[in-house]
Image (cartoon, rainbow, N blue to C red; front, side, top):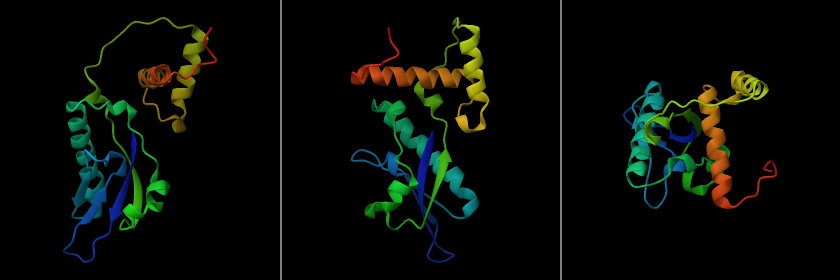
Length: 154
């Protein structure tokens, strides 16, 4: 998942870069970190995201429902006015969702070919066929739980 990260630039060479992940900040959680130099920013913020996401799972939060509004939305929020720059960091949270299980499914050739073609597109964001199917399943389950009718169903 991509997370927007606000970066507070250091005032001098003795200060660290301040980092905040607004998508993981609410009344119960706060995701902040610091990095001594620019090369450490990605690693430090990924570690902070994984630690907070792990704590969320322990407290029963469904991390598959996490949403990031995007850097432009957060940059316009007065709460984050101190952030001089915004960046996106991709963090794989799948290991926190539970043990992976191998399953055997049957799909028509044409559907499988369409899935594979979509996964191969660089802009798709899918790691592989399994990731695509997991995202599709989550999407369907969200619609089901929200009571949203699906026009593709018989």
